[in-house]
Amino acid sequence: MADCLFCRMAEGEVPTDPLYDDDLVFSIRDINPRAPVHFMVIPKEHIPTAKDVRGEHGPLITRMMTAATRVAAEEGIGERGYRLAFNVGDDAGMTIPHLHLHCLGGRRLGPEG
Image (tube, rainbow, N blue to C red):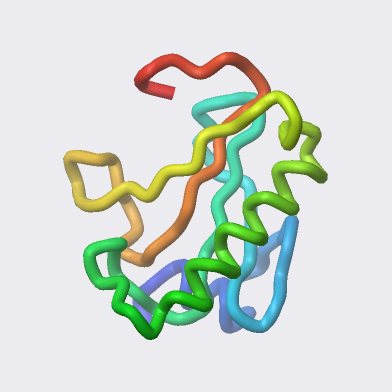
């Protein structure tokens, strides 16, 4: 989608400093971190929200989880623990309508992050 920031990043139209990048997903730091370590894993395919995930997306979701685990380890939070979350819609705080997995860690997290 031409007007989607994450799609433009995936296409190389908007520069990024990826923590991870492969043929299906990429990972970047969140620009508004809610924890000492806060990054996102983003599919290169445009999927608006987690509500739009279908059975055929199984390998993509697996890749997102694998990438999150790898980056968490590289960021030093793999052993102590971290939170993985998909935000869906405005009330959840979703600001870009493109599926992305948040990973937060680096301190003990409360119910709100």
